[in-house]
Image (cartoon, rainbow, N blue to C red; front, side):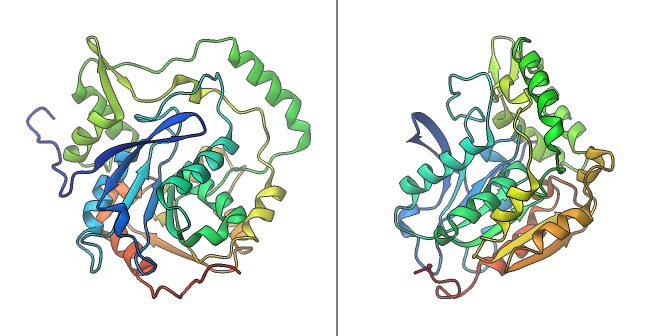
Length: 318
């Protein structure tokens, strides 16, 4: 890997910091946010667990090659405790906080305007729930592999709280690395499809040098489990309230459902999303869960085709 060159972005993002809910949130900005229009609204993107806003760079560069996207404004957010966003004074993270942060950040980034919204994995789950309560703020929504989680039973709650309480008493740690190349290799171990130039570039955003080691740009407390159950009946209530068009894109070789040992299936996911009034599902071959890394060029075509619509295609709710 040492002889390989890191990826060189076509368009370098600008770093900005936006204060929301008492935290300085880092955002990457491509283009001029002030140039957003009803026909080409701001595209806001949110990453998944243990990821960073820089993760979208390859996809953004591919989008820039699509008709009408040469100067369209795009923003990607670092969630609290990830990337360059501040870490809150907390020993645990709760899902509702992501929705709260997103709501406040949109007030700052696109006040009084509809946006297009995109989320990957955990971020995909966040944007689906957000669309269930703030659908009028979203013109169109793109979900990349945000399938959701297995259903839970109320009887599981006590043991979930026991596990959470026990984990609070253990120090949370993330592994450090001797070199940036080791960080890149770790990224490729997680995703063998990740091209070496991509891995080398992304490593410098996924981690930072601290003394003689490279450490991940993430609060170790993210590793602690949440005690709150994933209540499918509540998720279904959110889904049926989504009034904006939704595009879901999956990697044809995703291993996501293998994580749950039969407790959650693609068929169950498909049953849930039947509740979304305007939902379409598209698949990309030779791509896994990190499809925006695996096939950014093809993904850009899917996204551009979905978002390139007339401004009155989805008018704001009265």
